[in-house]
Length: 191
Image (cartoon, rainbow, N blue to C red):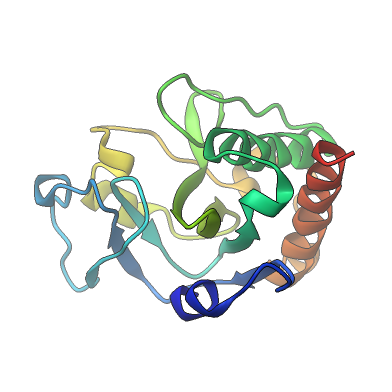
């Protein structure tokens, strides 16, 4: 993703990369070691994204957004809000109420974080993105102060969506549905 961003030019199409990670804690540029309480057997990796520490693992949808913000006519704050609103819209279309928290980027359901954001912008081009807790083991979050916040409750889509069906909730299926919502939002901002 760093190489893609460094090598792209003004004509390079934007890309969304959709994946799920093996268990890993990632520390953003502002990450403080004290927020990793007990990593145990899970590796801790420093990254060049903004933010503090988070956990990534199987059953979590990670969407890397490789977007030329300059070409899209957006600033970082506007892109963060677009990402958050896309998650909120995706959930609302399925009857789940998501919300933002002032000063704490991400999306929350009943006060528990369901989606975390971490971005890096270089020369107007954004990479990294968001992590949406879909159907995963949440216990590793207890080994950290997620996003630098002690005792931050976390949740996942499986716990929030009454019609959750594991067969319909693959990373691929949910990821593509979410990417469509994000793309619609992005196109709406540019029209």
